Length: 87
Image (tube, rainbow, N blue to C red; front, side, top):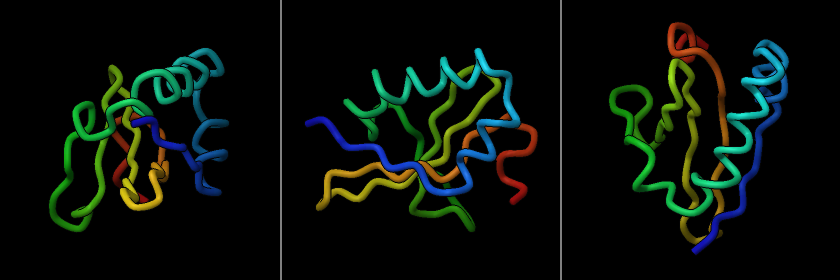
């Protein structure tokens, strides 16, 4: 099953803060791989982020939530691992 990806408003700001080539690669990986199998590629988060998943690509993380009934993936944040959980 292929999920539709929805980017929330703050993701555009996150992407502008990244190097353009890195941002393109992350978006490509989301479109190519994460849409196909969000449960297998992502790791469930715990604590205050319970219910969300993270997808790791090198030093970068994609924080997302899966809406199974609507077949959607909501991308909440994209950024470097050192500050992705700060906001």
